[in-house]
Image 1 (cartoon, rainbow, N blue to C red):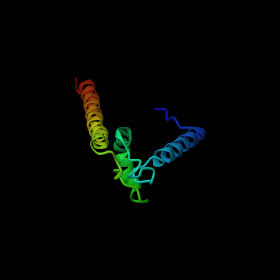
Image 2: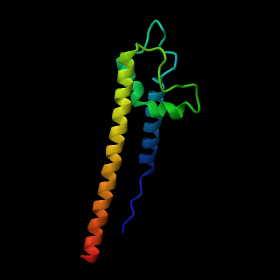
Image 3: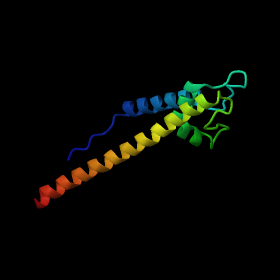
Image 4: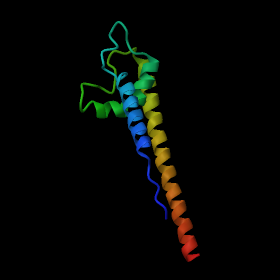
Length: 116
């Protein structure tokens, strides 16, 4: 079996891309002072904050960041937030189940090939 190694430039590009993505995401975290009672977060900000809720939760360990913007428009913000958090959970479960089914299919194929 031949082992392929990832080139150093690919590793560096991946790390650079990850750092750029993290800095972009952290610039739009809930509770960062961007929204106020005069300028509350709306539906689309709720969608975004729901999408990055897990990242916000982890980032909140190191900084004063929340997963939910307290200055929001009310029901529409909540709807957008819950919509993306809920979809994220369902998509995550679907991905995990598809991985399990794929692993079981490969295992069954190997067993069938060996013991036929």
